[in-house]
Image (cartoon, rainbow, N blue to C red; front, top):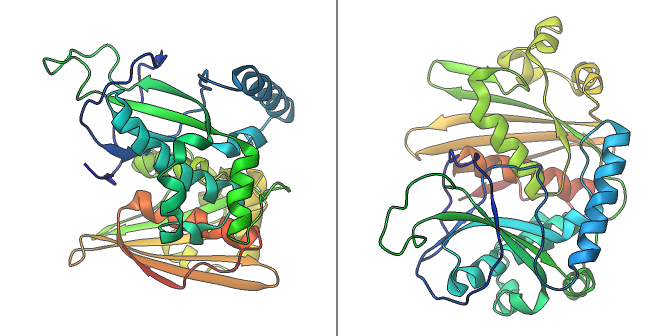
Length: 324
């Protein structure tokens, strides 16, 4: 079956790693990853020792800096959710991860859905150096006679850096390895009478907060969200956010360690059964803006943070008006 884009799924607890030892062909499907995990996976295959060393060094530097940043080695890995551990689903997973890694490494969101990627995705396995599984349902009873056919697993895939760089070169792109500014993300959600800003600590926006963190991880960006106290102190509400100039938001952003402000507004559209979204960001002495309609908030966040990454990486503006 084809990839499914779902709203936030509650599969985050009870983690366990599995080594791949079989090449079965159990049927299933691939779903995009919706939740961020900060735990590092043990990779299987070529380059295992090198990957572990890179992760150790990146984690050490991050701890010393006192902030969560994107490690350079992590740019060349991606994660999707697959059903079962059969090879057929794994191959689909490799293809999905390849597209994500190409976007993540370059910052070029415009590669999303590019038909030219089909030739590379069909042989994605040849670019893989290692992969690992995490059972999302560990501790829950088996629900079918096969035991694992309908169980969701996080499949984390690591790719050969030089091969990814070579693919990007064929598209006239290059790795974005310089400093990636930390985004301070201000997002207003409006659904009927409900209106609120996604915060770092407010229970009302738990799902949206997790989805924003997952989107940032998917696009290789580091983000911070405003706290409820900081918003109250600055008298920033959803209505204020729509018209607030960027300089007025910078003190709140700086307090959280943000370097660039990204503002989004999501309004639920009953006719399209999706969110109409507007994004704006100041960069390069001008304001950049783009929109997307009729999507889940997970996808809206991926488009927002991905669009910001495309601008910051020097790959041009995202499409001004996008539809699902």
